[in-house]
Length: 128
View 1: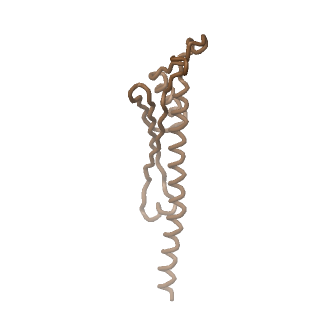
View 2: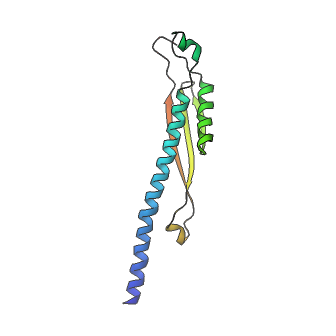
View 3: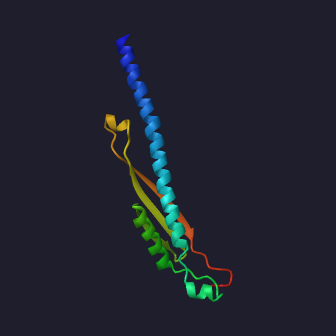
């Protein structure tokens, strides 16, 4: 009976570890995606102010958009990369790490998680 109990206890702890650490990893992926989305949103708001204020339409500064997204990632303390594709698309990719609680007891080390977001740097309807 005691061997059965030991095997059952180990199996239950392993399943608990998979549930808790699986959920933890999912939350870490959500945080990585959220950080990427917020950085992309921040970059998407980098417009050339003067023409917009004068009513000449919205012009997006791709270099400024990438710099704003990088600044957001730095302020949030998240590692990642920002690229501008074809001058109209801002791509943000983030990298984070999740350290398992229960599975760490059996030697499973930190897990790398990645997030990403893309924003189209659109021009305004007035041709700007």
